[in-house]
Image 1 (cartoon, rainbow, N blue to C red):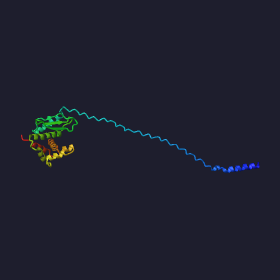
Image 2 (cartoon, rainbow, N blue to C red):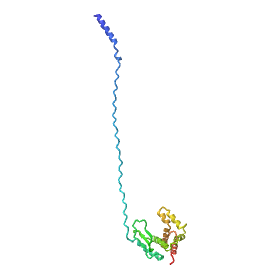
Image 3 (cartoon, rainbow, N blue to C red):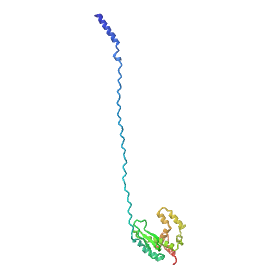
Image 4 (tube, one colour):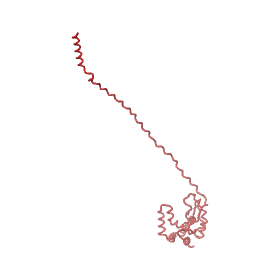
Length: 227
């Protein structure tokens, strides 16, 4: 029994020496758990904003022009001034031709429209214009120039007027200068024919700024052709 026990004890010692200690046993490397790939939600494109439609603006309708007058009430205001001018200047025919009035709002207040086939001066007046002596005699002054030229086309009465006023240059040169102006008013005040008409009006009314009205009236009377 003692011998058997010795044998068993020896076997146990040899067995114990043959085993590796547990502490030296390599540990298993854990497998890496794959991380979850995040799901990327595609961006929703921003909606395209359409421009707001421009409001449709209806065009402003052109104002309906007023009907042309069919009366001569305003133009007949010229008669008293015409007859007074004719009393002094017998070159004027017994009566003028008065056209229908011009509508209110016209660009101007009175007009000389030349001579008709009988030699009568033609006048027209804006329907709402209250005639003044200055305006009436201005238009009659235009008529006087036309009547003088009709009587004698070779008589340069404008050159005589230019000399009387002692104005520089020639009236033809002044016409070229006037035509080159860019505004209506600048053309009007520098136009020799308008200057003539203004002087005639000043001589008749007695109100003139740049000349003696008595001398001016005498000058225009001097242009009358011999009977």
